[in-house]
Length: 245
Image 1: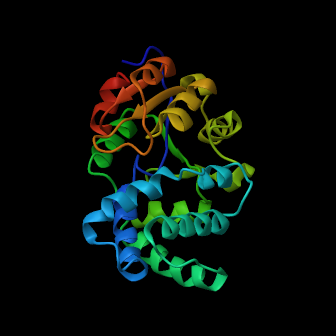
Image 2: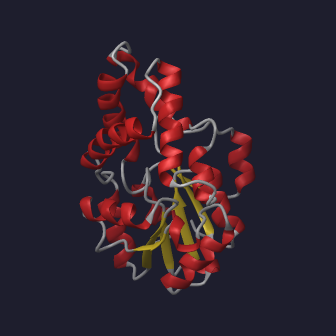
């Protein structure tokens, strides 16, 4: 149970509220059939794992304001092709690739099954609710709209709000300011232990790590979990009780 009073809850979006992993799986399977014809469907999970791992931290560079969203995705697409035998993509080639990827990715967005009930309990308790994300505002606003969450979870801070994203403590402070709560009375819930929950705790919020069943994007040890000093839940169904609501 939360050891302190809570006025608001901030959520990450991808793989916290929205099943982004599932959408990536759908989009990358489509890409594989078109651009990686020698890779059989039974390797689609391997492709998904490689994409999500982002070993060279291209998305991280984007969140730090070092590269554009197009640059990071093009780099990841070419690394994916190099790994699985696809063609090198020049600028025009990537434009065509990204049209396939993005259209399929957007069409596969859906809210996790545990979101509706958890949000209802949190809102019924009178808490303020908002979203803080490391992706672009227009992109994430569309994601919330398409998944039916926009009316209940307004997007407050994205990577383009300040020009950088999590784990910088300033983005958490700005989200709390816009939510109308103090960091010490605000919860942040996300699926990444370090970038989400532990970073929120370092910024003065109550960090909650949503460790959903299944393959994690990055490996996490028990020692890292213990050192993070955050609440851990395996489903948003468990969140209201964990917060003492």
